[in-house]
Length: 327
Image (cartoon, one colour):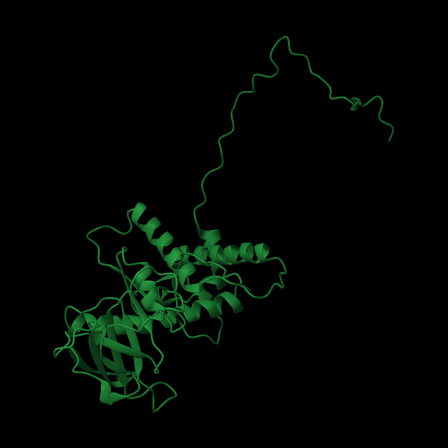
């Protein structure tokens, strides 16, 4: 888990790391990790009741709907990427006609890859950005996936829950190195956005998730995260925490760092220094930092051995004086 900064940057604040063991439920481990980290933030006063909800962005490898159901009691909004072959459903309406059967649980089908199944969005926005060209975003409110009773919810008592959220689709005109990009689909744990600005905030914050990829690259290439060939899993855990501590030290030394560049590197202002630049000047930063004074030394001799307590020699050790020394 890492906290992202506002604006484009390669810095992240690493908060926690957990190793997945064989047979672990990745979604359950992630929920426990999020609950632990947010609990610490609340206990230390960094997350207060009047603060906005914490926005958690994640890639397509997470079961974001189930994760939202596990963390429903926490002040978080989850934003996760979806595969383009996913299917969602609108809320079910009331049954029509004289039939007395069970009320339907799922409404109209939303197939992400089939635009003919897309309903009228609750909000639609369009922006022109230098990097992506024309960006068109749509949001479909109160969409839920169909859960499988044979999967993770096989032990759930009673009817399966309906986990509603907002499905957001983003179409861009171009991407760096790709002139025909595919649509980006996101699922947000909040069922209905308050306004179009909030929906734009969700998908724009998801783009910031890629900052952590720079952190992974820095940990591996510069700090040697994957360089040791460790056989013991506990040793790998200790080494991972050492690397995370080193990254945290660099982040704390960032305001004190001065530029130390090679002749062929372009000048960079101090607020824009990357982790690699701060690492290059870390030794100079430590030398220029004010160090705390050493403990004071008393000007008078100590009290010595109390009276009536002779010096006792440990068994097996004989005192050797200068007269007995043979050089």
